[in-house]
Amino acid sequence: MAVEMPREFSSRLGIVESELKALWLQAQAGDETAYRDVLGRIARLLRAYLRRRMAGALDDVEDLVQECLLALHLQRASYDSNQPLSAWVYAISRHKLIDFWRRNKRYGALNDPIDDVDEMLLAGDANEATSHVDLARLLGELPDAQRRAIELTKLEGLSVAEAAARIGMSEGAIRVQVHRGLKRLSLLVKVVI
Amino acid sequence: MKTKDFIDFLATGAGPAPAANTSYKLRAALLAGLATSLGAGLVANGTATPAILLASRWYKLLYALSILACGWVMVTQLARPLSRVHRSLWGLVAVVLIMAGFGIWALINAPPDQYAALLLGQSWQVCSLLIMLFSLPGLAALLWALRSLTPTRLRLAGFAAGVFAGSMGALGYSVICLEDSFLFVAVWYTLGIGLSGLLGMLLGPNVLNW
Image: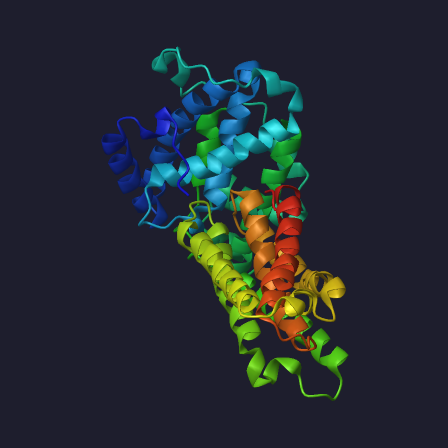
């Protein structure tokens, strides 16, 4: 049962898909520069896609963009390189969008897709797009071990080995704490929106 | 927070993607469901020879195992964002139809005064309900496992989990079920497994959300 993909994901798919996928595979292999680059591109696709479907809640679009990005990051093990990347991204984003609507029933009447808007307008300014997510505050709500592991590896930029030495945990334990922390963040982000 | 900064946050120290490991939790749920269902059946059966081992009941075992196989494929597929369930869904439909065909064939070949006995047996009032009850631990275990994975079609995933658990329930129940009629199994076993599927479908969107 194939899910039909919307225009933002399927148009110019030949170009977008092959570029995105090549970058994504590099990122999967551990290339952080490629990861930054591909997440930025995906964010633009997501922004255009979500703006069209959140006409009554444009103020929340960027929150959902970030929620989707976090979900993609957390679930990246589930990506199978035999599948089109855009289809995988779309399946996860659609799930997040439906979840958003379910949580915000008041937008129900306003979520008719808009189709006659200029693509470039929808894409917005990628560098300035801002959400209501307050990362510092959310991190404060995590258990200490998770918060420390995330702060060291993701904010201070230590390697996993350095972070492990710093707080006297094994590298595996650090990875687990980071993953659990991000997973909990993904639940906290929902409360924000 | 700027999305650009959020992306930096995600990418920093991300390392290589972990290996996909979807099925060990599902396998654990399968074992838990089978163990509880068969265990309940064996306990209820006591010291008698389990009815399912009688040679004339082969079709019950085959029916439950076929649905179990379809259920496994559906559930493992639906545990991930891009799932292909076409084939396993059609497989499920085919299995149910073949069993229905056997039931109808039995009916055609029976004298009219046997119809009620073929359809209702001795235990039609409890069969479906007990199959559903036997499937509940398996359903709970499967939903728990799916919840920590990444299903994106929650209703369908819930249904698949319910049918899969239902087939485990049917296996356990068949240990004590003395009925010997194709039609009985085609109707009441299918209904029991379907009820379990329906329950999973109702629970899916709420329980499996992430």
